[in-house]
Length: 333
Image (tube, rainbow, N blue to C red; front, side, top):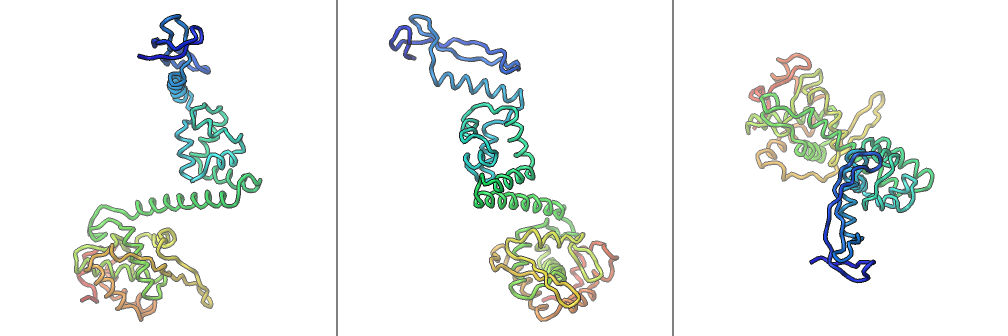
């Protein structure tokens, strides 16, 4: 039994729900059904908040769909993506302090507000510019500005990581040691090597190549899943993507450039937060063996050693060195 206060009868009466159709709303044919509470005694239409809220929700959802107006959930998602409050967002936009609160509670944004919010969602550079503008005009604090910009940088880095993973991930074959690229093992491996030796960018390729190929020889699979090509200074990660790798997958190591007389060298330094549990016991045995074999050799000596390998000798420049050449490695257990 449903009851509500009737202002005509001046008492609580039972009511009945009747249906009505809203055909037009703000220039759009919406054809949304609404519920209307009617007093059973006098026939007066009653205003019941819960019913009106449901009616408004259906109407606004249909209008948003037809007009392509931003939804309240999209606004919430935008704030959560950058970890900002309603107050911080309105400050960035220079709107009234309750505007975002109203929109997130179901109010329909104006076309200009909707379009601006959608642009901020779809164009990260535009959003970044709005944040920097708000900071320079003292609408937000440096803490808020840095928080958002750091979040944008993290997300840009995640996008780049995914692009690189896609570039380096191939169907399992003899060219990648029957393993797809494993970014977790790559990152931990580089960090671990750098913790044991002075690791130059120019020698990184050779360390990885020997480790992957020796592991394939002994355990029938590569560790990183990387594909290598012949280059004049020795085997390198395909298409020189080691440049992208060391500058993007840097949670566990970092690369620094140093000037030495007439040349510049890049040294990779471990952050010493590597996780060796990602490797099997057999993989660690291979890794430690190669590190021990080359720990006292300089870049030129390691490069010269790789030039002795059959896989490097028999391939043309830039040609992939398949892992079946691991059988002919000059070093091993």
